Image (cartoon, rainbow, N blue to C red; front, side, top):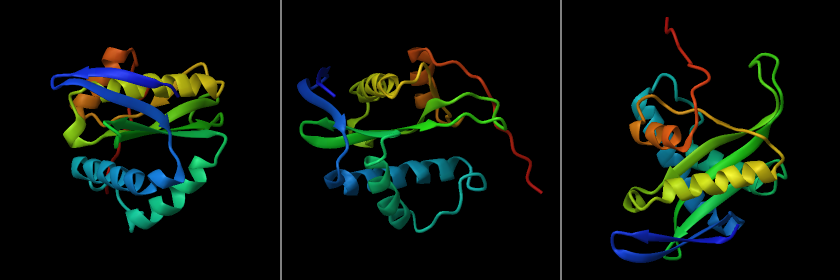
Length: 169
C-alpha cells in the first residue's frame, strides 16, 4: 500500500494505509471489540456470543495476517493507528446464491479520527486490495442502524443486494 496524503480541518495530516503486522495486534483487537460492541448496541439478540472477545480476536487476527486469502489494512494518522479494514476471499456458496468474491467484513475508524475522510481512504485501499486478491467485486453487510457507514457505502457506489431479517421466538 502506498502512503496517501489527506487534508483535514486542522491543516495537513499524514495518512498512511498499509497491511497490518503482528505488532498492530493490540490496536486491531481494541477496534474490533469496539465494532462488535457497537453492533451489540444496535441488536443484542443478533450480535451475541463469542466472549471473551479480546481473547477470540487475539487468536483470530494473527491467523488472518498470515492468510494469503485475507488482507487486514490499518490506517495511520500522524503515525498513530486510527482504523482498520478486514477483507477476505469467501468461496462460492450455493446456499447464499453467490460466486466467490472478496468480503469487507470489518471497517472501523476510531471516534477521535472521524470526519477526516479516513473511512473513504480506507475504503479506497480495501477496493484496491480486493482487486489485488483477484476479485471483480467487493461485498459487505452493514447495519441499517449505522447511518454514517450506510451513507459512506452508498456514496461510494455500493448497492443493496440482500436484506437480512430475523424472527425471534
